[in-house]
Length: 136
Image (cartoon, rainbow, N blue to C red; front, side, top):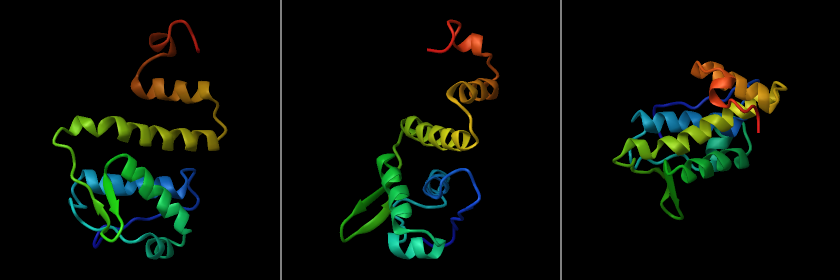
């Protein structure tokens, strides 16, 4: 991986693995990291970021689960081919983004109701519109 830089903000509410995952996913989706491009190995990448190898490994595992990268022993970790149907990426990416948001919101002390209210507000919906029966 040459060119695009991943930065980790240690003061952020989003954990470092989430920041790495989100930034790499964005670089892949926008084509700044092309199909087949090799990513740095875990240990040197972690050292460059000042993080533990486990943090980078977790980000890579989640990117692999989202089918954005592929790791093969001996071949390293590479950017995977994107599906020909972009809609196939949306559920996995939404789940990653929702997880990052939820983690940050919980770190701020928000409970489930406050998180859902914030999402409804961001969508321009009232809580009654989304779930007239109330929380379940």
